[in-house]
Amino acid sequence: MANLIADFGEWHVLVSFAYLLTTRLVEDIDDDDLDILRAYSLKLDNNLTDATFRQLPQAFPKHNIASLKVTRKRVEFLAKFRPQPFDCCINSCLCYTGAYEKADKCRFCKELRYNASGKARKRFNYIPLTARLSALYGDKATAEKMRYRHEYKHHDGVYEDVFDGRIYQNLCKTKVEVGEEEQDHTYFQDATDIALGFATDGFAPFKNRKQTC
Image (cartoon, rainbow, N blue to C red; front, side):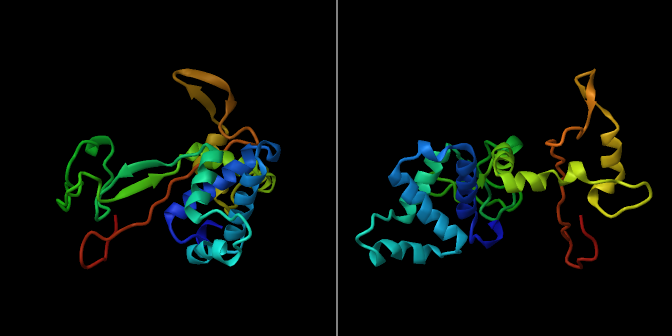
């Protein structure tokens, strides 16, 4: 569903919505909040644009349909889920965290971090990974799909899947170490263990674009 969302702001509320539905009982939510959740579910399930959703209160004046702003805020509140905002360069050169946390301008393009009012010119909302994974396992259908890794059968000399890879297969035979102490279990031993991979597209730093980094 995330690929149908127009911007990141909408997407983080979608994750909040999924997290809410998988971590709270319906009995804990009153009728007004259920109406808000039903309306928002309608928007997500049918890919309603923001403009269309904003017209619902006018189209159905006898029904208590909350505004889009109120709806999003209420979903976030009920989910107890918040993205972590970070300042970033107006040209997306860097994120002002780590070594750049206190910088007031971009080290690459030299653009200022703050506007005349002292506010960041651009911000990036990071969705905590733990909350995302919890939402995936909180839904029964998605949780079953997450078992694919554990149920996949590898055959020596056959490479059909990412889980046939040498590094992953070696880890499956390796005991986990915490500090310098070896544990009794191996990596990815449990059915609910999650194997996370990192991938990034290459980019061409030179105009001829013949090489990428």
